[in-house]
Image 1 (cartoon, rainbow, N blue to C red):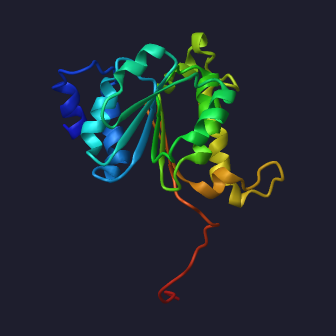
Image 2 (cartoon, rainbow, N blue to C red):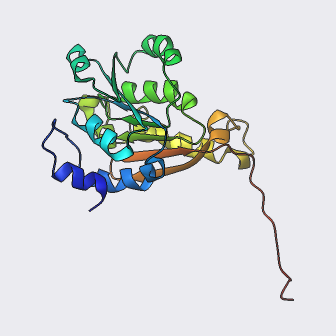
Length: 218
């Protein structure tokens, strides 16, 4: 088991609710930030256990932020852990709040999981994520659940929404005027899909080019 899974299995602190297969995903994409001076935002605080887990995993230099709509979560603040109260599905909240926040290196959306919440949060916060940051949306199975605004094949569920981002990632090659290079094209390095999780990693990009080295065989 990895460090995060070890912490989870031996946890005697505040409760943590996570799908077990997420821990390998976290370590694969977050390991490079361990021990560094990083800012991390997790949307969806619950009982605060995962915030303590991130604090333990990333180390003393990390600053952890949790966002939740429940004002009771404010009582979960502690050293290195800050709590923001607000509605992730409210654009006006983000527009007012995000300018007062640090630039985040990691954003984890484990909030309400409704389609509008996931899309609004992504549209407001991915552009201000650090240039080499990681944006992780979890519990994407709600895209298939009607009670969250999802449903298989529905054009406005987050899975279908994210498929359009794949086109944006590759927009350099489009000859169709409907698909052109945008901010996502020039800032997103990769999109990694897992069971119920999407991880988007940033890296500044220019249009790719191919080269040939060596000598021809004939």
